[in-house]
Length: 431
Image 1 (cartoon, helix red, strand yellow):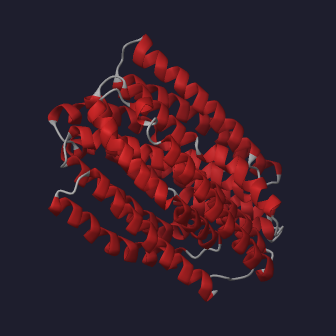
Image 2 (cartoon, rainbow, N blue to C red; image 1 turned 180 degrees about the vertical axis):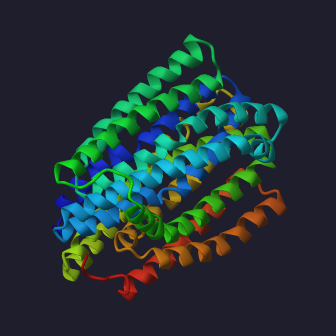
């Protein structure tokens, strides 16, 4: 299992499944961007709120993957599926609660983050409709994590590709065919998300029942899933706080910079999910090898995956640098937005090789169940990043310098993760 072929067998289908949500957001960005700058800036605000809510719950995928992979690697299939079902119930409960809370807070949130009242109105319309899909998004996270843990990468791939295609068709129909504007894009995305959630949840439940595991609500597995997820939640909070901080500063620069920031963030998200495919390989293969009690294979896999991270990040960076002059035209017709976007994309391209190594190491430590260290490391990185963003805001440095601070953010993450990898303290064997 310590070969590049094994890693790619997980990473390639994981990539296709991971990019579903970014592709949906790219489609929304492209479709809404041609409605106008106000609508695009409104999407920027709504997207960062939704991304924060869903991002905070990414532990549903990551925690489930590592837990299920460990049990599966140790040969305990019923325990693995019991943890998977616990994750689904936790996702459903959290999804309903977060949807209600986000809908109630939509107006003050969008007003606080928006650069103008018109932008706030667009953001509010998109956000309120999108909350209907929040439970579906969390169910997709938990179900996908469970299937990754048992090395079923094919099902999430098929489901997410289908959902992406449906999302584009629905959005074009509602936005331009029915003239629903930004609300139409939100409606189409919600329908696609619920279709994917129903499909994936059905697959997990059927697999559990086929081996005699109960799909009924049981408090124990749900509590265990929540307990395992708390450190990963803290880790994710620090990452999302950094994104919110950058968006808040971008909003002070005006509508056009905020719109350009949204496009840049969307493109970066796509690149991140591409790199995260290797992180998923790290989670799955690390969990399985540690569960099977094999430290040597774990170390060998980690070394190979880190090299892949540097290599894939380099390729992404080169492609992004070459495409930077043409990419803005896909998302906006506003020259002032496009002009601000090109230098930002070049800055982002520079940091992609280091980002590749960061995401691989993050995935390895998640797969090892090293959530407590990741939580403390995330807090340390946020403390290092916040002064950089604050300096840009005080100096009114503009969007390019704001994204230059992102290089410092990635560098700080790499330092904390590489130190942990070299320590070897994350290698804990057994189920």
